[in-house]
Image (tube, rainbow, N blue to C red; front, side, top):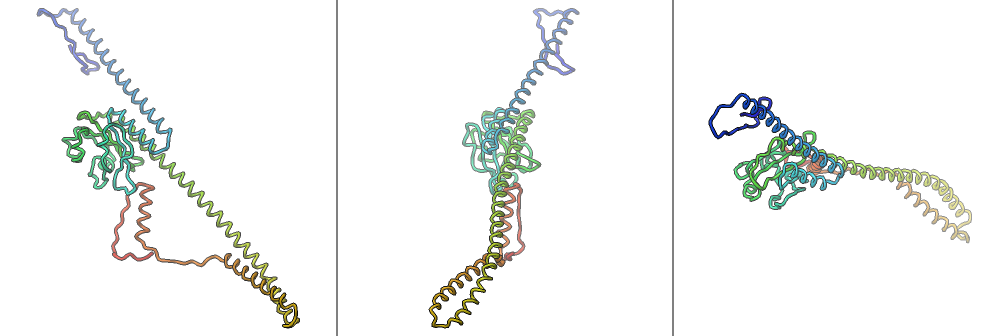
Length: 347
């Protein structure tokens, strides 16, 4: 007798008799009633099992969200992400890769599991199909490999590894911008990851991507605070120098006026007393000290005067390369340039 729930078969109920005989109407009704109860019990057990699984998944996702929200340190965030991915899809190994400073390779930043030989070197990002990680990074889509030994998308070096049997590669994406990949590796057997497992793993990847973006924004904010403090200190120093320059100009002006009177007075006294007077040495001392004060005043005026600009030629190529590298570090955006002339003109 088929066991059905809402026209969906969930099993069969069989009754064996020692002798061939037809079923009585009462026996048929009894078997149908038992079948209905068994089908309802099986369906209830299935629903309860699904609810328990979802509750466990939600509890794990909540635990991961709390752990990711509790820290802004990048290494801790990546380790939590790798550990959570391995738990949510029940794999022994999990890895997190982020682009290096050049933006041309994916560097292993966190891992969990017992297969260190799977670390390997940094994974190339170019061309886009250079590795499973680069495919997931550029397409921003999940990549699954059921059997690494027979899938041609897997690198030959990875295919020869004894522990690499199945892969689940998930991109880390924020605002349509890829920022890394997560990789779950099944080392026990070939495996087809279910849609529910992919959804749970994608939830972990999304949480890690948002946490990574938050950590990056905090790093940028802290760097902005440092830059703001440095700029403010420079402004304070410039204001002080400007005030000192104005004060120097005022002092020099106020000192130079009486110095002119002193010079004139010394010259007049020299003419009056004559060269043989006993006061001539004293007049020489006054003249020398007046000259020294005049030099100090001239130095003050030179210090207070703004410097003249000194323009110089700057090669364009290093300047442009520096700007592109800064853009990559800040926005993880690719930047390329092509020159149409051989000799770079100075800017």
